[in-house]
Image (cartoon, rainbow, N blue to C red; front, side, top):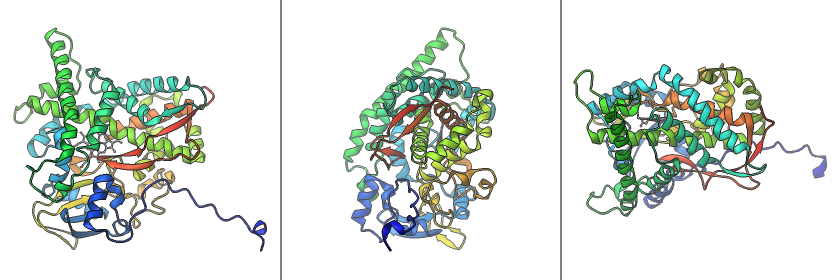
Amino acid sequence: MPQSAMSPLPKRPYRPPAPWPVCTPQSSLQIIAALRENPITSWGIWHFEREIFSASTILGHLTFASAPAAIKHVLSDNVANYPKDPLQLKVLKPGLNDGLVTSQGDLWKRTRRTVAPLFTPRAINDYTAAMRRRAEDMAIRLDALPEGARVNVFDEMTRVTFEILAETIFTDAIETGPEAYGEALTRYFGSQGRMSALDMLRLPDWIPRPRRAQASPTIDFFADEVRRIVDKRNRLKASGGKLPRDILTLLLEAADSETGETLSQEEVGANIITFIGAGHETNTNALSWTLFLLAKHPHMREAVEAEIEPIDQWPENEWLNRLPLTRAVIEESLRLYPPAPIMSRTALEADKIGEHHVPAGSLVIIAPYVVHRHRKLWAEPDLFRPERFLPGAREAINRYAFMPFGAGPRLCIGQHFAMHEAVIILATMLRRLRFSMAKGESVTPLHQVTLRPMPKLEMIKSSRSPP
Ligand code: HEM
């Protein structure tokens, strides 16, 4: 039959960029190389198919837990047996010290109680006007650019999420701009944030790790920043100025209601850096990936544009609940590209997870990146299908099958902050602007602590008719 008489071949659905899982087990050298360069390239097809299994590897005894019941067991039901593991802490602690992400035990409990008032629904309500204003300023600025201008979307998202964080939980106490922090984080992720082969082989700490030296200017930058931020607040206090009820006041004045203990200067500093880092880098990635996915799925972008039409008539703090499709698009983007793609714990004592034996000391890997694309948990796991998060469908998703914010007592404290912020920024931008990829350009996910679009996310901007 001539080609022209045939019905057109069904168009293959677009698969957003992600490394194909490897099909055969790799050598130790290949695994070390993959873990150093981009750990998500090391996942094998079996990780996306098996629910729980163990393996003896160069990293020691590993348990991969991807079944929701197993994840619940580790992160919630038997959480006391599974503290954060030394390998993860080696990557994060030099920068974050004993901040909320990396501390354990009583210090973690005390710090979490101290900062909790900043993340209540009422507190977040108070932040939404600032979120809207900052997002609107950015949208107006980008709208003024010539049609077809190239915009570094990742940098823009860094800037707006940083400004929001600085204005809300830090009440403008940070004077250094987002660019300097952005560069510092990139440097840190590219040095200390990459797993060292020597650490993987568990060689002693006295053997120098060249990449650690590369991280030291960033660590010095963080220390200087903490000094500047705390000095500014102390000057305000000394001058009798009214102290805002923000993260600095809470940290500096924290006296534990049960023990009366305060946080040390080092602990205060560690939390300042922790909240600056965790509070904007994650959502920068989430928003960047969302804009990329919408550019690749114009029908979905048009549906979102239709949904956000009436936003000006609603208070910002209602948007998250009034925009189910916009929210679903963000959640689907968090599923495909979870900004924190891996979580890990160590088993203190031997344990059983279902029928599976976990020996003491096993490193337990729970990887949202894998769980979110698991063949047994999701239909068309690699495709962008926001409908799965719409009301009516979402209820069927197991709580432990979708966990971009983690789960259990160590659940992300900024989860609601992040979701309000993401919806407000996205809706505000899409009201005025449209973004597309330049012909032939794409990005790939790079896993270095977070999951960033690489090489950079430059998009073509066009204006929609003004609202
Ligand atoms: C899309 C945005 C975000 C994502 C995907 C995300 C993801 C996560 C995940 C997975 C964890 C748990 C890690 C583990 O259990 O090992 C976590 C913890 C944490 N997140 Fe987030 N996060 C986001 C936004 C934020 C924001 C906006 C803040 C602060 C303003 C924040 C602050 C923290 C802190 C302090 C912790 C440690 C909590 C604890 O251990 O008690 N995050 N985040």
